[in-house]
Image 1 (cartoon, rainbow, N blue to C red):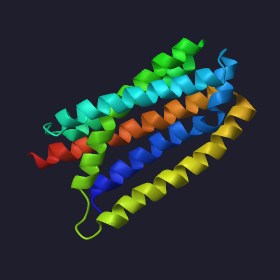
Image 2: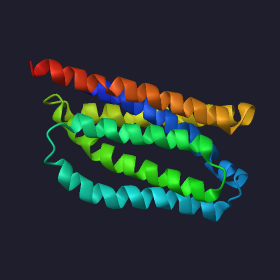
Image 3: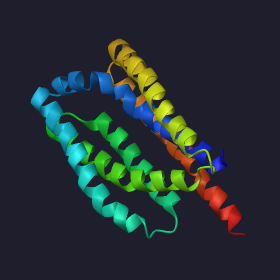
Image 4: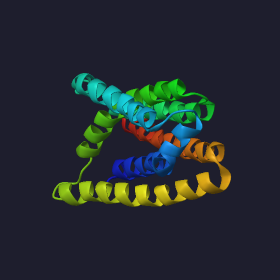
Length: 187
């Protein structure tokens, strides 16, 4: 497996961990800030629509970008800002803004991630190396869901969001090594 795939899998695992921690307690948090189930559904729809529409347009542009690593990192930076934003939410409309930030980050980072991941697949191992990503996604999400429920139940949402932010910052830091590798090659 190529070094770039290992980096991409590591960063994805950390961001999946960060996001997955919130999944099982999302609706409880929305209620805590004064929302209801409609608010929770609408906020997630805001994220999905933001990401979906922007991915459609941004991915066409990203086909022509030479350094997809920078786009992945930009998406991760926006995700880190989103995780920080969770710490600041006091009302439902704040959540909508944070979901838009996450949607834009997803739209910038995901197509570039998929393109770079595909570019570094080993010949004859396309299915197994994509299978590794898929397997990791489900396992990390499962671990995160259990851990997120425990952390929120035991310590509350602020510590949970802090753990999510820390995991995302570590993931962002690891992703920077994609640029280091690129610079070495150009010498």
